[in-house]
Length: 235
Image (cartoon, rainbow, N blue to C red; front, side, top):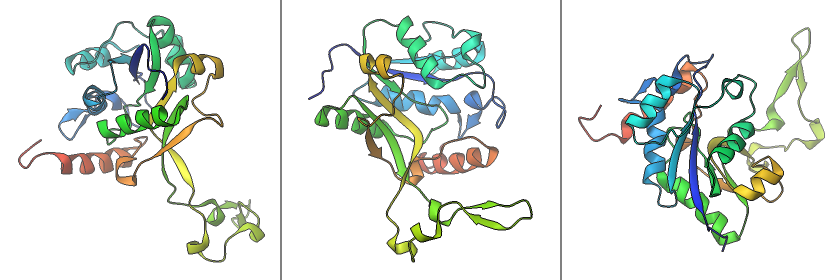
């Protein structure tokens, strides 16, 4: 069993700037601000002790508090740029919040992840004695059938022809990060500065819970799927 001495912290990073979908973190989706879906999942997860939102944006922090998250500090503006690595935001949170044993990073752009996914990924770390686990989903498009385009619009295979399976049925399954759940032991994370090493476990999620919102189309798809979860007559 992995050591759980100390706090299991759910960190929800939500900066104010967004080019693909402006204001997306507090944009209403299926009757709630987008970030609220992640706050609720984190609060419902049995393994989580604290739910903290990291943001430089006053409106986001206000919405986060309204939906039950803690906002014990304001993220510095230099950690809220387009090019800011997520790990810098995570390590900043660990500096601000002593006593954290496990970090659970939950991006608000994955609103379909459930509390059960968080608990199952954490339980996998515990059962395997692993320092980290991230969520993945089976890749829908495989690299054997991907192509570059030449300057004159001709197809150029991404991978060598000889490596390509003859039939799709013969291709081995591949998995992609879905952005929903990242878990790591805090001391290990400080040392590695990454959730992804050869020690990291994978928690597989179905595609219908793996929508990662980056475009207006992603937002529309997520809204449709979230509305299906609502009780009849809900928002």
